[in-house]
Length: 173
Ligand code: ZN
Image (cartoon, rainbow, N blue to C red; front, side, top):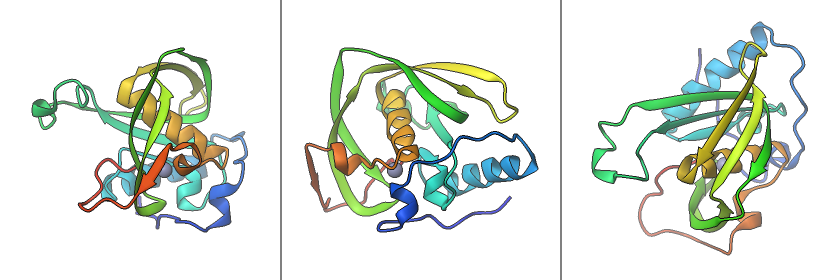
């Protein structure tokens, strides 16, 4: 495993539509392992393959269960890792939520983005088996942000406003 460098704007790969993964081979396993390590080192809560310069439909998300429910228990909450290949959003709630986002590929900025509160995603795991995830709140937001990356869309395209925060940005994706 190794930490890869994170691609930042204006790298063209961030604006490209990533191609579907068709081979679940050793190269894919290496890419997934490297993406997990790179996300943790950043640190970030999600990462899409174009963010390490690879135009393929692969995302990783790591999230502590009650992060948005009870902030005092963040340190205690177990983290859950999701690896999704060829993810597709199958269902979205009518209800939306406006919240803060930042991106490892756009350093020094954050913005407010309206996202669906609840989504259902279908994709494959790293072995190619079909998997489905139902996500709500912060987790649903991370997935929407990462899947956008696979289509060359950045949060700043969707943000109602973007600004330079005075302090450090937390929870980069
Ligand atoms: Zn991002």
